[in-house]
Image 1 (cartoon, rainbow, N blue to C red):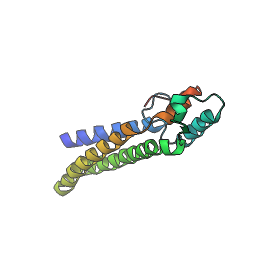
Image 2 (image 1 turned 30 degrees about the vertical axis):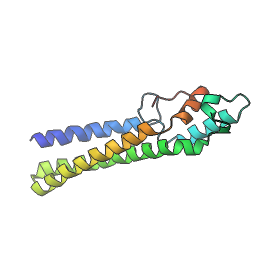
Image 3 (image 1 turned 135 degrees about the vertical axis):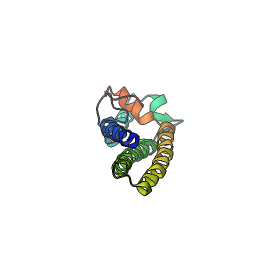
Image 4 (image 1 turned 45 degrees about the vertical axis):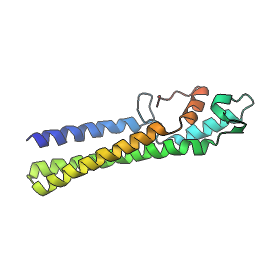
Length: 147
């Protein structure tokens, strides 16, 4: 009965957690599906006459916004896929617990460990990505959540 409660709770929390990928102010990964707009805004800011040296330049050259945002974009998409796979795995775990299928429970436990490892990779990549395109968008006055 405990595994049914565990998987049911985490399946529900996972569904609620998809909110964090919506482009709203309080979402953790709100930029996931709007990174093209972020890059466009950052390029518009840095193409202007009054560019910020800290935000737009790396030495004497302008920073390539697309390249600077690529790691952040990839990490956010990877995190989204991990979240969806986590929902599927929790659904498998709930099914296994309800049917008392020991083989399926074993696979659920292994898959959960793999998902945790992949989540560490995704969040590590996200934290190592360059936040400068997001800073550029903020300089334009866009309201977006912090990273």
